[in-house]
Amino acid sequence: MRLAIIAAGRLKPGPERSLAEDYLTRAQGLGRSCGVSRITVTEFGESQAATAAARMAEEGRLMMAALPPRGFSVVLDERGKAMSSTAFADVLRRHLEGGTGDMAFLIGGPDGHAPDVRESSGLTLGFGPMTWPHRLVRVMLLEQIYRAITILAGHPYHRA
Image (cartoon, rainbow, N blue to C red):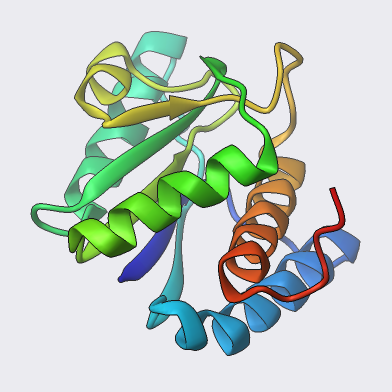
């Protein structure tokens, strides 16, 4: 299965980018052993439209255009379902075993996702009710992807 992270907002050089790259490298290395063949990151600049609705719509169009055809999409949103790391690993396992070819994770800009983007997703995932900056969400998502892969591979990283 191929994983894609599609994000509004670009990571600038700094600690968040370094950490994101570290988790991405780790996840790609171990992922091959459990069926995750590739992890890509596609990022777009944040929209400069005049209103929040217009910004969300513009970013949504870019994200939807970047989705792999017939892939399963996961929207990250503060209203999304909170789940444990093992439950998240189970989601990946079910898709791996079910033959899903592509899974995409969508990270919105400061205004969040357009309603049609949320409604078209297969899963809306939240890292709790707090609002997180996209820079940290990307790091947290990549860490959780890496953690899920370690759970699937039987690696001792996850100790719960």
